Amino acid sequence: MRRLHSLLMGRILLILLAAACTALGSRAQPVSPGIMTLAEVRPGQVGQVWTVFQGTKPEPFAVEVTGVVLNALGPGKSIILCKLTDPRVQQMGAVAGMSGSPLYIDGKFAGALSYQMQRFETVRYAGFTPAMDMGEVADRVVSNRQAPTAQAQEPAPAGVADSTDTSFRAMKPVFALGGVSPLTASIMAPRFESLGLGIVPLAGSSPGSAAAPGAATPTLIPGDAVSVALTTGDITLAGTGTVSRVDGSRVVAFGHPMLGLGDVQLPMCSAEVVAILPSTMESFKVANIGPVIGCISQDRLSAVSGLLGPGPEMTDVEVVSGKQGTPLRTLHFQVIKEKHIAPMIMLTGVVEAVFGSNDAESSEGFRILSTVNFSPSQQITRESVYTGQQGFVQGLVDFLGNLSGEIENPFEKAMPTSVVFRVEPLDANPSVSIERLDVSRSTVRAGDSFDITLGWRNYQGSEATSTLSVPVDPSWAGKTLEVIVMPGRVLDELTGHGRMFRPGQLRSFGAYLDAMKLTRPDDGLCIAVVEKSSLFFDQAASTPEAPASIERIAGASDSARYQRHEALIPLWEAHVLDGKVSFTDLHRTVRVVE
Figure 1: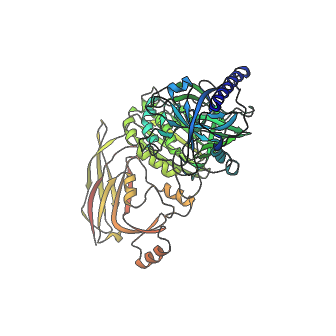
Figure 2 (figure 1 turned 180 degrees about the vertical axis):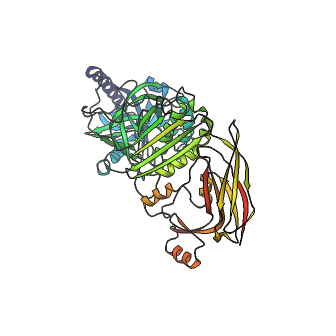
Figure 3 (figure 1 turned 90 degrees about the vertical axis):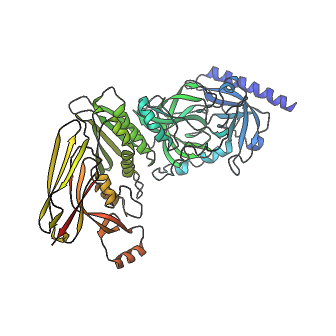
């Protein structure tokens, strides 16, 4: 009898709430300040879950409590298991984008939809994060309001959450990528997947990084759609979920982690649900991402939470493409200050500039000039040249590696204030084929000179040569040296000047920037006369053949800062074929006599 009474009262409450929603309009909501504890949750209770099916108006749907799965997520972290009894939801199951949809039982907030219980089940179930667990995350918001993100932990690699064959899993938010072409999305999808971000190239772009000046203070109610963005502007990337609870300006949503980054600074955006795309495996909401209405500061096991109001500080990115004298195309967007994700999003903007237009100007080749600004006096510039769109795809790893090296500094919580990319098409394919490397003499006297002649053929063009004269320093006497021709990146590695540095190698952010500026150009080739030696490194500065006593004393005091490596020492060096691309690696030997 008690079970029948509970079912009857629950259905009556559902009818009354739906009627109130219709009467009061689009902002109607279940007003319920009370919190239901886990001990009050019992099998057979009827609950109402509020979410947006289309547009911006939350609607209720019915569920029935099956029971509580104790310690399902670890000690003290349980899950409320419910049957999805509403015919609409029973057909599609728990939808990605419903994450955080609040569950009300007997007029109290009991929890939020957060876990899928579906794969091939004939009856749909879902898991709900208890309200008290979500409150733990909400309580952290004020004390961590200014939490930085530059040193946040790395996102979990893709597939970790789904490594076992189970139908019980958190409803991972769908990261919708908007403002890019399908080709750009297909190129970038596997790279985002490596960060644990499964993307769908179907999202409306944000009209801006913030609400319009003078606009009213943003408001949200439980059941509203809300997006947590990683980038806003001409390119958007955001995960859409549902608001679980609002307490003044404090908002709790999702009922599970977005990326599990802990203390964060992420834009909270309004959202409009365009449609729900149903699937027997995993349905999801397609949404338009609105302007920034607040800042998410917590991304934890039981929820994400933050404050309505101003958004977080972000890195401004501009990508300009086109030839001088012709109309230029400009992409302008803002990226979160997170060292693992930001470079990937910036790369997306560059890929879109190369592939996302009707122009074929970049088919022959193009150059990319990047400027990473940390302050007016602290910046890193780099120029790269590519042989065409396919050459750029093949070089994405190197491009991303350079960009990550410039941004992921391990020395200070310093992220760029702005990054500017200029993509300029070339009139001709910049690739060259090196056909010969001649050294005028294999044995030379100290104090004399010898010539190096490099011969090459331009792409579909004529042959060309260049001869350089090398003066032989008297100190080279008695040595057998190598003449090498190779790209600057390769020579950097062989001479011990890598493009990634460990915290112990350098002692300050300024030293890091100085070391990055010493890297050789990415275009053309380096011709160098080198000798093999043992280099003793103090941070990024090297000393050849340092006395063993100094190495022992320094190494004992700080083994990370002082290190010894076998490397090549350039005795003479020149850069040739500016603006060209070649992957040549040639060696010749020269013996220097008295």
